[in-house]
Amino acid sequence: MISPQVMIRLTDVNICFYIQENGFISLKDYFLNIGKYAFLKKRFVLNDLNLEVFKGECIGLIGKNGCGKSTLLRTLSGIIEPESGKIELFGRVAPLLGLGVGLERELTGRENIKLLCSLMGMGKKETNNLLQPIIEFSEIGEAIDWQVKRYSTGMMSRLSFSIAIMKNPEILLIDEVLSVGDIGFQRKCLKKVREIMLAGATVIFVSHDFEEIKKMCNRAVLVDEGKIVCIGTVDEVGLKYQALFDEKN
Amino acid sequence: MALTGINKAGFYNAVFSLAIKTIKLRYKNSVLGVFWSMLNPLFFMVIIYIVFGQVNSMERFALYALSGLIFWNFISGAILQVLTSFIDNADILKSINLHPLSFPLSAMLAAIFNLLLSLIPFTIVLFFLDYQLHISIIALFPYLFITAIFVAGLGMLLGTINVYFRDIQLLWSTITPAFFYFTPIAYSIDLVPERFHWLVRLNPFYHFIDAVHKIFYDSRFPTFTSFCIMSFYALFTFSLGYFVFKQLRKGFISNI
Image (tube, rainbow over all chains, first blue to last red; front, side, top):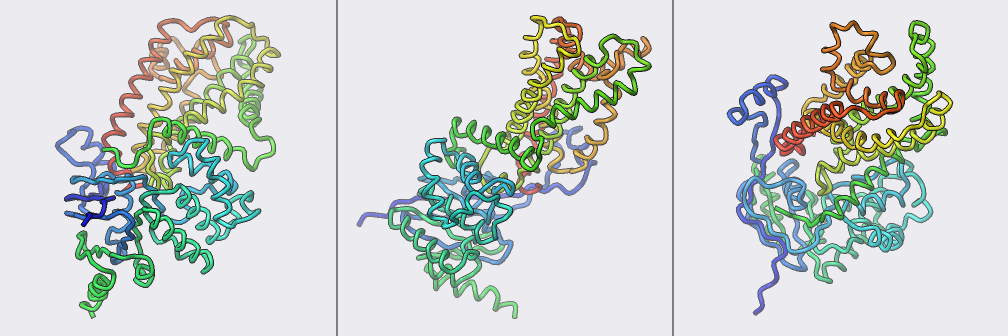
């Protein structure tokens, strides 16, 4: 039996926030006694994460609000550096971390595509080649030459989703952005996500909507109180997730 | 640790796109667009000329004031733009894996581009104001380079702290006008009593504006000493800014 190819591997990963809450006085103290005094307070957000995600898999991240799901995705996309541990990614990453993020309201849709593509590290040529497919996929039509401030929320999410997905990622990180478009576009997105999964891409999908995870994923991960509580099939993890809320009632 | 692979070319490409975005946005909904970067100092010069021109016996005072004003606008404006660049781009910072320094860098580029644009009409006005063309104009290139490092350094320093305390940008906007009057921009240092000259010379902005006056008003090269002093300030602010940024960047995402 051939073991499946690992695309993402987390080994003993800890993720911290650095919070500043003491005001100017602490800044002064900090520079007066560098090293002795912490200007930024360290707060552990996620601890001892161990996870392997395989090629062609869609894995769902589930957990209460504020449990650190988005933080984990940010870390995977390289925006936050882990405090310790090792993160290995074996492929091109496309993060989709929020709706319409990075879209500049005063620029047109077309200008925004170019801007975002270059911010995500694409060259001019690559961007120009992708421009037409992105516009077509988004189904925005002539509105692509309108300023984004005149777009509806749904249109914005269409635009940002189209940009991320057309980058042809090997690892796609999606943070609750699919639920905004209309049913037609949602279906189209899901279809597209499945398509790139079949082509060998790996998807990490964050949601606290269990139904959505059920539709999309083959495995799920439950995060609670800064730890991975459970990794398993969607149904298995779903029960544990429900149980989190039942205990209290 | 290199997580997602954004290479050097990609980095510069991103910085360039951000700079273009900044320039586009600045003039997006204005009719006169780029001309504002020229009109602003021009109007200011007229006001200064009317107010101070009477008490000032300096020859070609308009030329002196306008050249000073253009570069003062550039320096003070660029510092503010670099300073706010992190929080202006908080959204992108939190959602795209891009080196945080690409924001101050692109703000700096946009400011320089803006200055170069305003220099086109400026040169035309210069000749009306009786500027004597001289080879010393080429000193503008090293001057701009040093100034950009100075501005980027100071902006990076203040901008990093500004992520944690928004007071910094308010404070800076408040003291900028004070620096405007404290720096001999639209008046000559000769108007300041001799015993206070050391105080004026302590002000880094004095050296950066004085060099401009040398080039455009006196039509001669800024002195070697002047270049040394400017380079010193540039290196000092840049290393301090970079050091502070390095120390405090790990909290950017959690505090912005």
